[in-house]
Image (tube, rainbow, N blue to C red):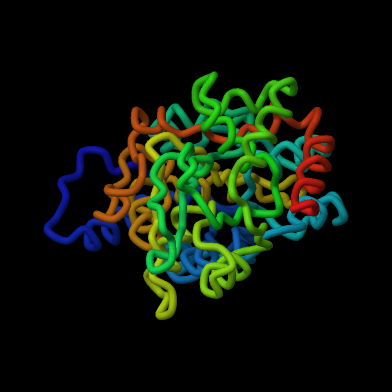
Length: 362
């Protein structure tokens, strides 16, 4: 299924189409219980742009080249509860996305069939940095993103560059996410810089100091979801926010109202999109073959052309915008601290409660 040794034709899209077809010919022979290529595979991915990429790019390629049907479901929440509440032999998905927190919680209830990397021909091309977190033991890393500043270029009086800038005397009118505490405490850990790449967050004794850093930021509001973020920037309630690079760039490209700036600090934090094989579907081999298809350099290149995410496969070809904005090589990922929820799970509830109190008292 790999395409090592191929020469790149004049058109990259022609390369993707040709290379993926060759890879999927082999895939079609190994999917499904009888190799007939007649399975229906239910895949849950994140909502929004990710769902669009799966439906418009990945689904047609997979279906044309295997004869299977790919059902794509967009989910931002409830993935683990939906599986947990389903019959053990009839889960709602065969494959599902998840960050390190979803991975950990699913592991607690044995909801995943651990990915057998020996069955993934392309797994030896996955960047080593993405294989280090505990989540990679049971799920395959497919893509990753980094956190960035997003700001109203027409309204802000300061230009954010490093995360330390958010607590500088110059900073003002900041909005932070009201949800997951770990994302913002990791930003604070980068600012603290007493340990490499946000490692402070994995020691419970450091939490109070990290919360103090967040309190020092000139936070005028906490936003609930993307639309609330853009509304706050548009209405002047806030001028600068902490957000995701890929989604920030997508909004900047599509907005006719906001003049959005997006800056990735030289040292930042990030997240990995892992894909799990769900227990009980009876399609473990089909699901693993799909994961191998998904992490092939051809599919990863097609994915990267549509959305400014980093890809797990080291042989991915990136468009210019991604090359300029993203750390794309394994060496460059040394500047990114990736979330590893398993390391904070023991005290997660306490810190979430503390963070929610901070949000409510703002």
